[in-house]
Structure formats: structure tokens, C-alpha cells
Length: 248
Image (cartoon, rainbow, N blue to C red):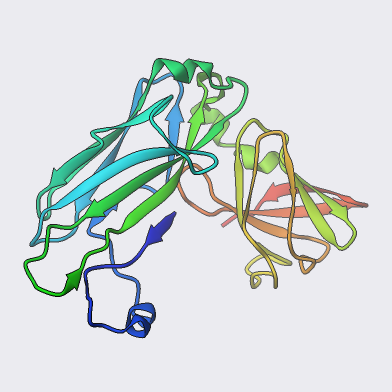
């Protein structure tokens, strides 16, 4: 989840003070950090709330494609703009259009859901108002790929493998789902490996990890459908490594 974190700022404040200030808390809050759109459904709804108890805010939503381009099809946001009263809750909906049927049905498609808060106009002189924005991943998951309760007991992320290439590892994703790796270490509960950079591996794809500090039994942390961060421990034979779940 990516947030832009500037708030109402007096225009006579120095740039240094702005940059040094701690991140402001969003007034408009979303109830999740990622969206899984069930291809069998016409829409998916999310809860939004105005955490500011004194002021109403506008909430503006839109969709971007995998390249960051704003789109209105095959998915759209309803309502595109709404007013949320102080301390109130509401909903925003991602609606599927007929063009969604043309999306690949053998793998997930990636989009981004954006929600921008717009504060009420300030009555104070010499102020600059900048809206905060939340951007999260939105995965369109075809009906055939929606998992049953029994299937979720064996997460699809456990099917990824590693291949040692020189002193680094390549992540191989044989599944039809996107897999997001957010951390790596050389042992369970170990510190994050030096030089590690998060990455997302596309369905049926592969990607190289950036660090060579994962040792002979790498441990990777991924983000699941609910935003939790389970770990996978890999056992290697030669240059090939298989994953097993780390028990909490």
C-alpha cells in the first residue's frame, strides 16, 4: 500500500520543515491493504471511514492498470466521488463491466485501486492544501481460480520454488496467481537479508532476488490474500529449492 502523506501546510513554512515532519495520518481510511476481485461476482465492496471527528471529507476513487494508467474499463469505481461526514462510515464499490469477460481466465490480472481524500476548503489565509492518497493492488481473479475453503488450507504460495543462479536465487512461480515477496532472511526469525528488495512475481513467471545473503536454507516472507505475512522455509538439493510452511 502506498500513501502520499502531505497535509494542510502553511505556505510560509520552510521546505525543510515539511520534509522533516512525520507522516500525517489519513482522514479517509480503507478496510484492507489489497483487493481480490472474484470474477464470478459483478462487484466487490470495501468499507471506508472518515477518521476525522470534526470535518467532512470527500473520497475520490479510481482504477489504474498494471502500468499505472488511469482506466474506466473493464473495472470502474462507484461512486467515483462521495462525501463522508465526520466520524462516519461508507462503502466504495469496484464494479465489473462487460469488458471484464475478455480478461484472461487462466490467470490473475493486476490493477491498482486508488482512494484520494479531499479536505474541506480551509478558511485560514496563507495555507496550501494537498490531498492524501492510498494506492493498493487489485487482483482480478477469474471464477475458475477462486479457491475453496479446503484449498486455502494449502496456500498457492507454497508451490513457488527457488533456483540457485550463481550466488543468488531465482523465484519460480508455477501458479496462475501473483506472488508478492516482501522479506527474506537466512533463518527463521533472522534479520532481513542485506540488500533484499521486495518483488512481485507474475503468474507462470520468474524473477531474481536482489541479495546474495540468504544462505543455503532461505526463508521468504510473502503477503497472502488477507494482508498477513506468512513465511516459507526452503530446503535445497543442488540448485533447486522447495518450500515448506513455517509453523507459528
